[in-house]
Image (tube, rainbow, N blue to C red; front, side):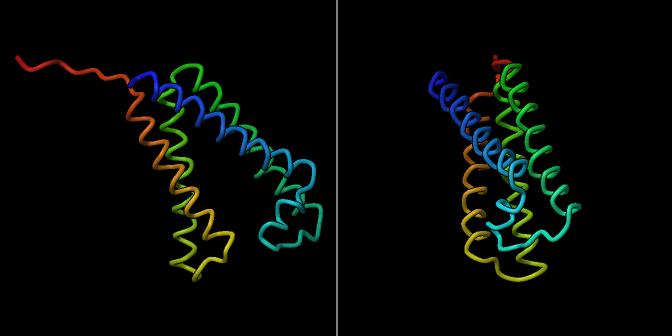
Amino acid sequence: MKKIFSYAGYGFVCISALSLAWVSAMAWYSPQAVMDLVQVTLKNTDALSSIRGVYGGVGFSVIAILLYMTRQQLSHALLFLSLFWLLYALSRLVTIWADGALGAFGSNWLIIETTFGIFALVLYLGNRKRSYTPVS
């Protein structure tokens, strides 16, 4: 069972890293393409630079940290991904509470991010090193 959690954990880290890499690469190549997903027009170079930085630069930084953590200890990478995806979902919930209902894009991603966050947490629990002393 431990091996299944391990393989699933590595697979999930890869899927997460690839999805982040796709958005990061798109942000560096065409920041407007990223914002087209939410129907926002970038009207100046500061806006373009900000999207390149936040979705591109920060995204690639997260990938680097994620890969480092995966090599050091898979369970830490999975816990990080759980936090990462669930905080994305929480950000969407804050938007609902503060500003009203999400559109189709935000609603779909709320489900995806929540699912990814819970899945990462389950994989973390299955992969963490257990250190306990049996009761005598």
